Image (cartoon, helix red, strand yellow):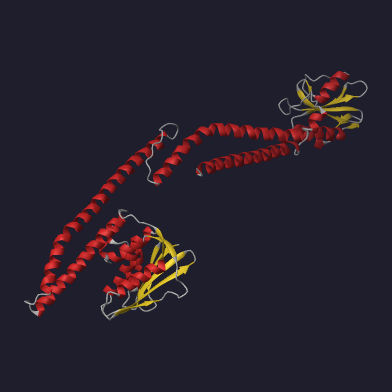
Length: 461
């Protein structure tokens, strides 16, 4: 099954592409969030700028209006801790009451890396002490015990790639496990659909997530098998009916031909009566040939005429048919010309010799029947690479472009159940097409370069 691996590759491709797109989108999203939250504002920078703007005046310490406005905007407070006494020398007006005014070295160490009474604190170096800026409790989060092994940081890129690869493998395994049951259910469905297209009976187990689809395919198979059996019976009945009618007509027709032949040669009848008897004989013979053609066409249509394929020389077969017609002493209005190249004496093909001779004979007879004023019949064989081309053409009245197109493309009324009024060409060409189709060949009908009708039989060598 070519469809199952293709389906698996499609699923895997979609999954891989989806994961790749999600990873890229996540990286871009986190990069955007990180840049937005780190580049726009830094509390450490604000602490440094506030410390730089702090000045000692006659009235005491003060900061610039810009720094004060920024602290107010962030709802932050600030204090200045003296280097020597570790007491608060200066503070902003919004300093919370719970903030201590005296600090030890331990207190300073804790606030530098963490919080003051739960307020996230950030420090900047002032001229006479340490400036501390505190923010609302829900403004920042600080990791107070951050310490990383150096090897961990050094190997972080490699470990990230490994973790990503492991995650992809795990995701793939989970995906494969989750869809294995689905894929196992699809296999019988696709096999069943292929068997349906070949006309084989189908019986799929009706279980799994595709149980309803399997049920419909099984019902469709049953309907198709019933229809195929009904069609086979109808075709058999039709073939048997044609064979029976052909057999039943032969006996009375033979009697008509026999009595009419006696009347034709009788000396007791007038010349006009003998001529009428001759017409009866001629038309009766034509009816007999038509019945024979109808019976053969029916057998070929329903594969009741087995083909005995042997390696034969097509040049010899065509020449023999032409010679047989020449020996019939036809009317002088009809003559034959052999157009096969003198260098070509052998062209071997796999063929049923008798049926191929029948096809060629039908084509010659077709030229004779449709040209009452006579014509020249040309026969040729060509060895064209891997095919053998047998051409029968004449210099007769030929056919119009519309007729040629209809003969090439319109089905005969025996093999088509509609538009039968437009398919009135005889059984001769139908038999030719059926015989050549049995040889896995093709038939090409065209205008002859001699002005008449042309039929080319193309058979693989």
